[in-house]
Image (cartoon, rainbow, N blue to C red; front, side, top):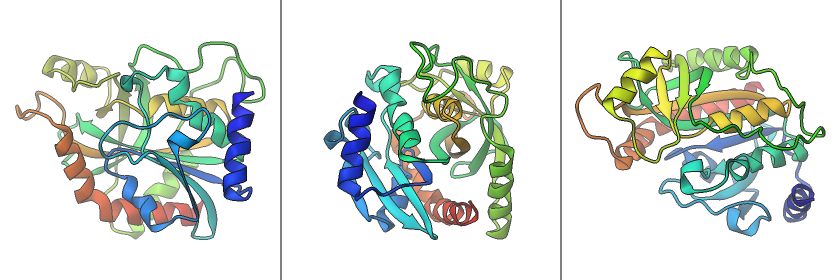
Length: 268
């Protein structure tokens, strides 16, 4: 019932704007939405949504037509580590499904595990490892959203990955590829945990994205994931980590990030 109330409220505020593409803009990456604002709704006004409390996350839905495509953008997300139940964290994705979204671009700032990565590099997510010790699909199943036992073989769709790589090549952006692992946070990983992450096969580590990608895939929404490498993960360089460093790296990547997103949206 609440899901329908949310959708009804959004439709009333946006004159039944029907987005085909959704973007979740991570730490420091929300500025992309500033250039497009047909309709803007703060999370705190939307039934079922939560206010974002993290610096670098404005906490509002932005609706706009970009490159001829109708798009809804989460200008910042809310996180499991903020104390929200995991079902609240992924609630916006279910709303996107009901609004008519077919493709989701999910972004984040992440720590680099691979020594090939530098701060402000962009990494195409080819797969993920859920190490958050929680699953957003636990609980009664809503058959209108997706199946009880969804397949996760191909969460990040190959055709969207190819589109992103072609867009990066056209723009002369060195888009890296890798596996993303999600931990709960809010603390950064220890050096020993970084070693574990590497042993388990991840190239980058963060505190988000995986729950949203899982639910989008469950809902039949095609997913493309992009990480902005904000720093080397703990223990690789010996330097301490800070959220300010995350924001600075996102700012350094802002220009190429915006260009890449526009080119991808154009091709969808």
